[in-house]
Image 1 (cartoon, rainbow, N blue to C red):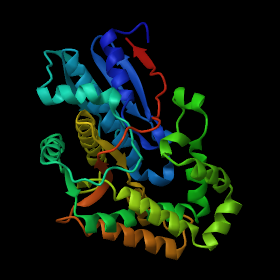
Image 2 (cartoon, rainbow, N blue to C red; image 1 turned 180 degrees about the vertical axis):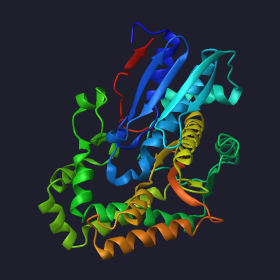
Image 3 (cartoon, rainbow, N blue to C red; image 1 turned 120 degrees about the vertical axis):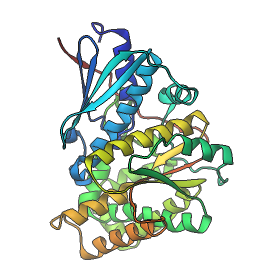
Length: 355
């Protein structure tokens, strides 16, 4: 990166600090002198089972664009974001002089290196009015993508249990079990190198549960425990922890398409940065929504009729708590908690150069 202008390094570094599924970091950067930065999404870095229409990758691309735009403005540039034709995986930022951050944007930009997933239990306290307004203010103007909060305790408990249907199935379906445990790693050194996947300490498991996870990696152990009801018990425990949040935030779209995925990623990142700036904690808990869309599109995926029914029912329970006819795309829990025990690092960013 030493041959590139300092502001390009800063912009790319900010972009790479965006969230992505299992810390996949699915992007590539190309700088074209004198003032153009291209961000290309790489869907092959994401798990195909949960990446219908490249939706997960495009959400990550949107979050990266949001960070890059904020950092560009902080450096005095006004970025014009251009997309290729329909179906593109590429965004281009053309940097013109004259950019300036608003007061709210400044707080978001400063929160970029501080934003992390927090999977701990949160304090069961309601959102303050000021915090709720700050999160909603970060949404921005309408693009067919919206944010709604679920805050009533009874509704949160119902939605939380629907969400943990994902964990219940993952512990008794061989394909999901392999994908989940295959993404977990135990090495602190790997984490510091920005290896893709889930570092075990970021899961916030107590030591006994961490040891159990080592045993559960083996399908023979997991399948035995599934026969005695272990997955349901774990799902109920996780649902209780998820419901300790102050609210669930649901990002909805008026239709599923690739442009909406990018915009949803941008909205998610703005809201997450706003939460971070105000000392709040946030965790994405959207796996069941992605799995529901996968099963809707892929009749050949190796899931039983009972598992498919459970996923459909969970999706319906979530959607039934939303107003109107919009589709839930992403869901997160947000609230007040102690800092995470560990965070996921990113690979050192690299930039291609084209004159």
